[in-house]
Length: 457
Ligand code: SAH
Image (cartoon, rainbow, N blue to C red; front, side, top):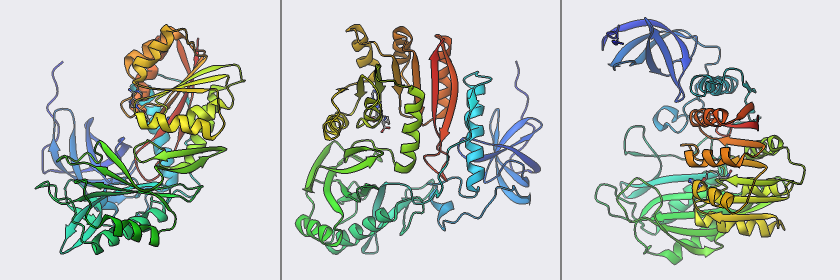
């Protein structure tokens, strides 16, 4: 098939109507069927656009003038919304965001998963969708003798100072500002990315919403922190809710945040928090869902889809610190959790003990390696829950599920596209996807979480 010549040229103007929103929040307009992606355009809006780039099968444009606004368009409340890029949907009302996310999940299930009539429920959103994040990771830079802590300006390495982030717990904003001021007072130099010099790279704050406990992590280039003892005593003096101060050393010239070495500088190695009836110890490097209120909603849905009666053997793949595992363990005979980060598995074991849960067993390793081994050794699950990172499940894991044939699979996903891809493989292997429930874990961003329920046909 020969590709048609693109019907548009760079630097020309068009009047268009946006038809759709991409997974990264751009408006989609079609000119003679040729898709043009335009930042800030919303479905049903009529606008004048300028073509900025033309590729083989699609192009990009810039919004020049809006003729007709979407009923879901609002003014972004955050003053740094455009510069920051951490949120992508603040110009859409919350109602509009939830509708867009449901459509997105439905769309990829049909397009990528070839699942025509799976029921995708309306997205479960938050009553108050602001100030929800329990973790802040803020880059630091030197500026005119002082420190700035904020965010990378979009498409640049410039760090912009930020006093408040509207999706961040206020406590975290306050902790970051205070730690920055203290480090400044003791003359700590910020990391200089270009020359790989300086000390402080990032300040991380983690807040237990239920416990009120705070962890501060200083991510530094060097192990030595000048005036370390003064900094610590100022932090604990000014922030009594801090229970743990941790250092992570990352000496590499990279934009990866964390290095391999983690040391407790003061207090506990972890902070505590609770979701529902279960208490969790969380250490600096472990994955812990960033929106605790919605995490409860998500896990309750996963538990409901698992439909446990108390006699089941369950596997929780990609278990992190054992959060879903321990939720499941209350209703199952036995739960096996597997996770690749050793510290997270240590946390998971501690969390089981902390909650007096004795029917959960945890292993460190790749789910796609550990679960086939369990299967070889006679472990046969009635229900498998998977909660993989954005890239989805490894094929070897999906194949093991198809061999093991659990009656149910519950798929918790933070990326609808890989969810759709993996559901297709499970469908082809004998499972039916009966329903999908998106849960809004990340209001005002394009990120979209969903739980799918599959049963063995
Ligand atoms: N279910 C947990 C964690 C989900 S995030 C929760 O809700 O908190 C995904 C987890 O998968 C992360 O903890 C990550 O470290 C882990 N992971 C990534 N690749 C993996 C693999 N191949 N095998 C096992 N775990 C993996």
